[in-house]
Length: 337
Image: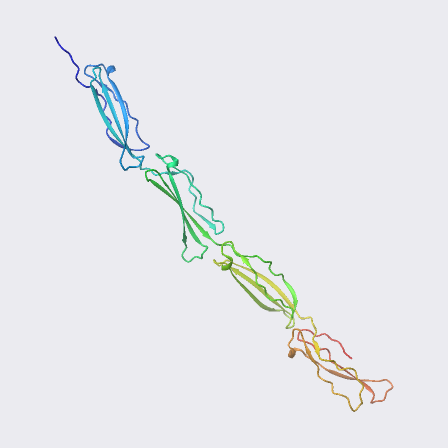
């Protein structure tokens, strides 16, 4: 009597996959393995594959191990098991899905808001990728307060701490001049005794606070060729300058003229009849003028004899006049009897 028994386990015919480390987005599929048996036909050898996940203590969610087994069993229940360990790791940084804003130069009143940017990751779901945006101001050496740089960053971090940072540099500049908020006084012609005071004008600026805008007003006299001393022009300017030296100047021209005649001070001597031996001396008269100083007003007195028809030689008239006093600015002529 020959008792035949089967105690030999099946043998795998393919090389057993070696332990390996792979990235989380490059996990290979568990392959099928074949086995032979010394007694059972190949079709009677059953191969079962299995895979279990094993977390790595202290590691992130995307770092773990896959324990893969293949068990070959023959018709008599003899079994052979082989094992592969696949260590999965996440070392890839997230990728931004929108174009990164380009570096730009903008005016200080047109700085755009820092936009939100999305990112994807090869292993983490989009809602598990954290994006932090940041902005810091960087002063430009030697530049004014409104000329500076904004350094903007976006940092995307996945579940395993892999991060990717993008940077944009916005150069901010102030090139706009202040604006006057009040109407600029119009050019005007005024009399020499009615020159208005130069007013203050208010301004605004796109970047500089009103209190930091410097307004300088100036007035210069411009003689008019061939004109008298009291006929001239006043050139008035207002210059507003912001913190960055941008300046705007407005101008008003006042044409000053003297058209008012001098005025006698006191009473004008009345017409009189006197004895030929008691003729009074022609007095001096005082005058004032609205624009000329008293010592610049010329008073000329004149006296002429006028015979009376049919009268004797000692009966006559003295016609005393002063061409009216003349200032340096005007010389009207009239007679007073």
